Image (cartoon, rainbow, N blue to C red; front, side, top):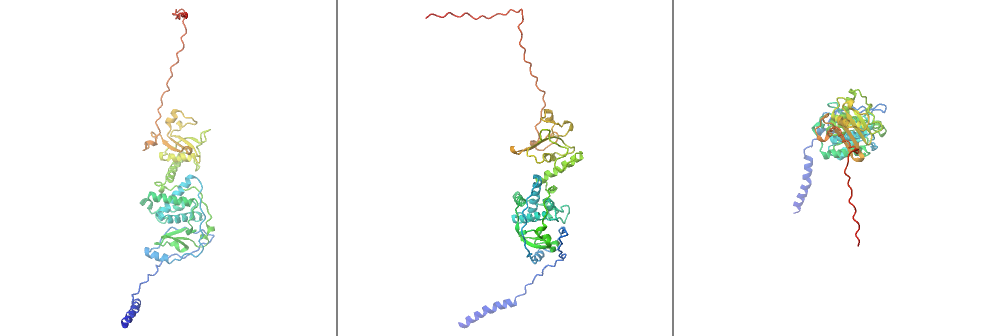
Length: 412
């Protein structure tokens, strides 16, 4: 029995040893070779160039292996300062939809990833190397077929895929928080990022500072990656992005406004970028405008033109005619002027009203609710003259009516 137990013990020790010492060698996958440009730390006196995005030719697994071998920077990674957008409602609306589009197309319906992307975009806005508007940062290089800063802006993704209503609402919530001071601290002052299955050429000149999901975040090496470098401010004047017109009221209205301004320029009416210079409110009515529409203006451009005319007025009324000869100069309007009106716009937030109506005989519309009620001109009824009292005629004998005599009182 003792011999059997000894044999079992020996087997338990010797067998694993033999397995380990004689096991076939596991091939070690060599780190992918990347021929990247040498690292260059840009001096403070020179603004670092923003290069078009180009990738090293690597398979996804090779790229992941390479990226895993790049260490994270050990230098401090302070959070960015809060960003709060100011300016007109028009600018804020455009910035919000540009930022929401970027986060949902770059990070998908992932609120954490969306917050990280939003922070990078706002970091770029504050850096001297990038545009100074939200839409300018997001759509930088959109005119290129390749090499734009955010690939969804130039690779056709905006036409191929649309986020669900829920995803779009969530992206707009993330964007609104970011534009009102929310900071995503983990990415610090990162200005670049990419997914872990690609290797862009610019990576070798930046410091790897954070990883969020499958995305890696980078900042410039040297002074250009430190907080003092992020010293620029939002300038206002968010551009109209035609690619967003089908999903953003702000950009659709803006696109119509561009068309309206072009028509006004063609008609010889100068604009100052806020209110058409030739348009002034009605004397004594600072919130009312009577204007002649420029030739060639489209019906879709009229609401934007009216809003541009109203500017920042809380309450405003715009009435427009297509014929200068029919355009009145003062209020109130008579029936003929009302009937000739081509377009009207009214907003009164205190009453919850914002409405635009078209004269559909001048500007045909698909929805009957867009059309003004037809004004029927009628001749004013002529009142019948009040008959004059007929004077008594002399020489006409009239029968007089004499009351009967009263009965004498009866004696009791």
